[in-house]
Image (cartoon, rainbow, N blue to C red):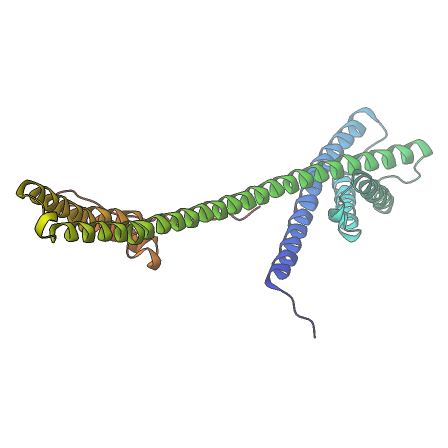
Length: 286
């Protein structure tokens, strides 16, 4: 029993979707150009024959249109049958178009004969109809291939841009995590190492104040040392701890949003603040 990973399954689905889009673009583009060319050629040929050929009493415009429609249907069907939309190289694309154009031109001419457009066609008439049908199919197929390749390239660029955006997002998240790590290290250093040193300094000052006899301090020195102890205690309890909280908020482990709200909560009520998170939207490639 074989299992398919989510990544490989997504890649297979993406390739299948890309082939479907290529097939639709190729066949629709080819059919649209071929129908326009076929209708125009049928109307022009009917007009020329009816005006400049005196022996032509009835202009079979519907027969010519029907033959051209058959040729377009065979052209598109052949491209779909040989799976021309899978072509990746220029030779593969050109060969597929030429093959489909030959089959379509033959089908178009055969339909013209069956519908009685030509009772006994001469060799020059046959060659002209086959060549015009082949030319119609080749031009239409190449334009359809160009449309398919253009859309394929656009889809590739969009996917590359999406991958780059994901890489940038991952890099930004990595930088954010590194910033948080550095902040935590600095905050722990302030809260741990620096405060420990301040406690040791305070203990030495307290020992200095506790001396008696000949080593005792005079009143002025005692007042100065006491003032130093007070300032150090205030710095340790207020400045160092506040700086540590600012560098690494208490709720940062719970997420960035709770930490930001905690920081905003320390701002005075006289200052209006708000936090908003914009959702990220993703575009689906064409």
